[in-house]
Length: 464
Ligand code: GAP
Image (cartoon, rainbow, N blue to C red):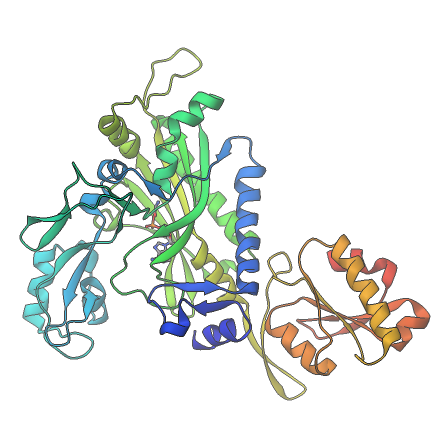
């Protein structure tokens, strides 16, 4: 992981957030190559699930929402992680992570009291070796105030502060994009009156005040999600659930990720989110171990019912065959953008040996690579080579989808190394023979083999 983090920074994929001020934990900034890779992933997702389906409706809802949304959804009351404090240095930790790291089994099934008991019985210490305080639930939503009026906090139970919801201007940075979809359910039905099942999809930022963000972009405080809520008749929930499990796997494979690193894990009842009746996580073999990549949940009609009750607006769907109206149930396939990008980077990171020299490079699939090809004149100081190379460069920029990069720095070997490190599948070099024969050298990143290709055939060669 350290090597990936170092390459990502050195080559302009991902930088630490607010780095010149010492950073801000849980935030990372995508650099020029990172943002292109991210776009390639989100565009593939949008194309697969929205553009190529006629039962899917895309939206882009506001990040700030009426606080009642989060009261209705259960996040105000229930979106919490167990927090424990080091009694000496006051650092705060995820209690369940500390117990798991101490080798305790089935932590997810434990109540706060049980966790406190285990810490006392086994004399478990903080990662800094100090005694721990009592565990308490810590709500992970990031609060903010909208407008000029600020509200006061008050103690709702000993040690737990809450806002005065009746009068306040409190809002939250959304912890999931899903609620933006639920509150627009009625709008989509009114505008399009689709048949069930149909889905609503959204890509956007979400925010979680994680107690201990860690592992690079794996656990963030500011993250991005690609989510769909599939509205269904509850009679069909099992079949729809299975269908979306398969579609998630197909998308996984379309990212060029290998079957061998893919795991479907049934989430036990005690570990499921408060809204879910069944969940299957897609886990991936990251460099940091096998961990959750995406989720699939059967959210029943929990959210629509809750919004119907809180808002007083009907969330019923009237079947077109004249059947009785009902509140649809929901299957939710959810995908973390950052974790997807981390899986792609992690899987692409390859070390081999070329001519006795160690080479670290990114074996990115062509359709995700942030740069599709680099074009270079063999020598920078030969105007006739530069002119010809510029012509090839400009023509490829018109004919190829994706980024084409110009590079005339250093010697050709160094250019190849740099291109390999950022995962460019092909390097195109214009040399003296090109002037006579109208052809170029194309070097393949993975095999390092070089072939001559006629300039007029270059676009179709690179598209293959
Ligand atoms: N709407 C359902 C939902 O938000 P979740 O399992 O809490 O479910 C969905 O999150 C996905 O978002 C996860 O599978 C993961 O890919 C990503 N995710 C969640 N928390 C994250 C975090 N702190 N940092 C990075 N990605 C995260």
